[in-house]
Amino acid sequence: MVSGGTSFANRQEAGEQLGAVLREQLGQQLGQQQELCVFGLVRGGLPVAEPVAAALSAPLDAFVVRKIGAPLQPEFGIGAISEGGHTIINEYAAHAVGATPQELQATTNRESQELARRIQVYRAGHDHLPVEGKTVVVVDDGLATGVTARAALQSLRAKGAGRLVLAVPVGSASTVADMAAAALADDIVCLSQPRHFRAVGQWYDDFNQTSDAEVVAILKKFAARNAAYREAAAAAVPEAAASDEAAAASSSAAARAAAGLVIFAHGSGSSRHSPRNRQVAATLNEAGFATLLFDLLSEREAEQRSNVFNIPLLASRLQLAVEWMEVTGKLPHGFPVGFFGASTGGGAALWAAAYLDARVSAVVVRGGRPDLAAAKLPAVTAPTLLLVGGNDYHVLDLNRGALQALGSAGQSELVVVPLAGHLFEAPGQLEAVAEAAAEWFGRHLKQQQQQQQQQHQDGEEEARQV
Image (cartoon, rainbow, N blue to C red; front, side, top):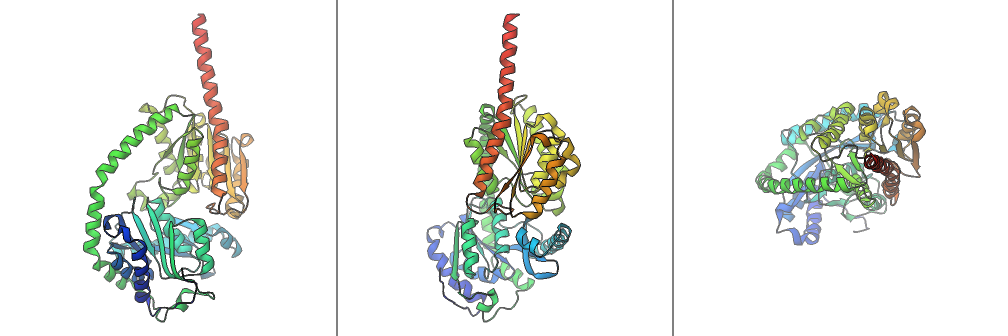
């Protein structure tokens, strides 16, 4: 990374310089284009990404992200939404400008409509290039607050991207450092980190806005290469499906031998590939629990933004997962089951727990939205652990209210992780969440299993006596 104040004539020149650096860094993968793709964050990032993709001989697609501005200062970004419905809000910034949940939702809805319009214009509404297991280079024209880049990286990671590389010609040194600390990308390439950085545009002689027509024209140049990439990715699907089937059978066997099963409910814009949920699941596996992570919505359902907030629908998928596993014999009768819900998935987990009642032994909610299941909270009998970041002010208030409303309030707890935001990004914060979840499930799921084992032994003893 260069710490000086390098400026660029235009986005094309910036992309050429960036492409040369990336070509050297990713040289060993250049002969395997089917394993590498480039995304430009539209609109300004795509003209930079074009020469990058050319330098790497890689397919190129647009990735649509929209900034969520403050209600009275729309130019001040307090969050972002990316295609796939992944939304992030800087809770500290939102609190600082006094943005209410209703204002945030209205702004998010408005930006979601513009996001959908752009996807329709750029790709006729179709999904972007497949990324599962691939090296994905995410390119923008610069990095100021980093909020849109964060949303894009989190969304692509949730969709299963293997290695993520964030590449920009210029950026704020503090933002680059924050992004590196958050480990949202595996690599960050920033050609210039000026000492007196104020805005991205000041480091370009020509920083005119990129139009929809320019985006479409750039994508047309890569149509043939993108089609070949899609065909190669599609050809690999049958093998992947077979692997998933074998993994499911293996997981089923592991569940029967475990101390309990924890089913995950991911948040809006996320999926079974959520890196945070996978990290928590790994800790639970080490603690002796089986885990199940699956998509709550189909790809078609997820395209409808309102579905990611349809808590009854999401909860029904959790209910069906439990019932299906019982009917197929993958889950022994009475086997301890717990739910782990993140963000909106927390609301779905609580709603489903209320429906399944005693069938669910414990619930853990991370940075959750229990308010979305407010009507069902009194019916939740499972001991519930609410984990919230100390700096996630709005969500913290929602969870304090939910704790009192829970039917299991006397057996439930609210734990605040100091200085953590909504995503628990700082080192050690997500580890604290995982350890707390393992302890909670260990206390309640293992206890139920031990009680059932004791009842079984008592029954056998009575039978022998008879």
